[in-house]
Length: 88
View (cartoon, rainbow, N blue to C red):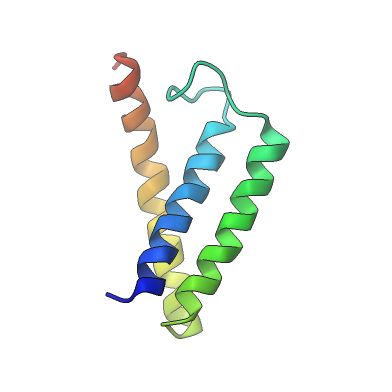
């Protein structure tokens, strides 16, 4: 696996973390992050992730890899939050 692909996976996962952290119902931290700052960071990380994926892949493959990573991370983060907070 290429370094750019790994960077794209990490950046897209961090973008999902920023998006989830801005939610008022998140359970990872005591309170939600400021939404404006978190959404701006999320957008910047998504663009960087797209660019990293695009270094190694064609545009359609880039879109598929990015959306698949987003679906996985956004599905798993609420469960991680419940596990960390001790409430299930």
